Image (cartoon, rainbow, N blue to C red; front, side, top):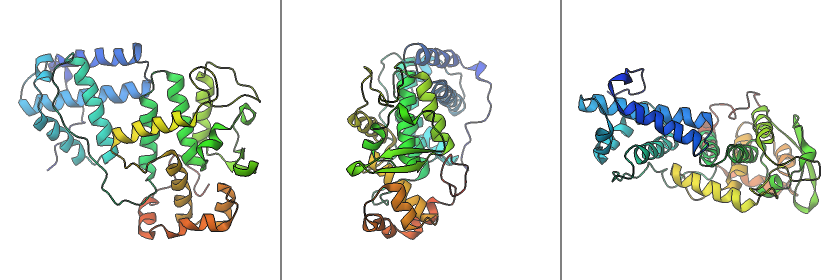
Length: 314
């Protein structure tokens, strides 16, 4: 029977709870992480402390954290996996644990444990859950709140609207305020209208609210650290870091988010002509490649609606 470790506990018995709070303050003050990230990481620290306390039948303090070994970390992750969390969530959990221990023990020797890996041979499209985890992890790693909001908005836009990364980088302030659809300029300067689901619009609006650089119709929507146009290489670098931390395969790239958008819509019954228009393909043959994706995979992926859409077929 799997041991449950995320139930409410009396953390007052563990002095290490103060170290967890200090870490959360460090994330807020020095790393300027989002409140969402801070809450998630603090919850992970509390789960670890609770697990160690019950595993050892002892109160956990700084010395208790410093003495954690690989076997205990493996047991902790096994317990979390027993609660049903996916590989990507387990990888993020391990990353948070490492960050907490490194801060709490102040550079002490940490046990080495590789994160869970996605099995080789999975279909090229990534699952909705992995797409969201990728976007959120990339945002979590940003050092500034506005950069975190930007990276989240960009990656949700690639997956939620099927844009090429270059098309997203080419958007200007003319698309603001974001409505139910935007005009996108693709290859050969061809313009198309792309629907935008509300959560993607909300993410872009939050980025615009936090961005320190002024928005204007003729200026790039997504900005780099110095105010210029955001480079596609920066987006690719953020995705590389996130997929490494989450244990996702190397083919998980910004362009893979566009492939996933297309594959998932086709699996839900979208016709090829409509999909061709959404993707901006010049010929139908370019769109037909998505019909070769394994049908069983599509059925598995789309047992649930397109993430965060809340709009059925969209």
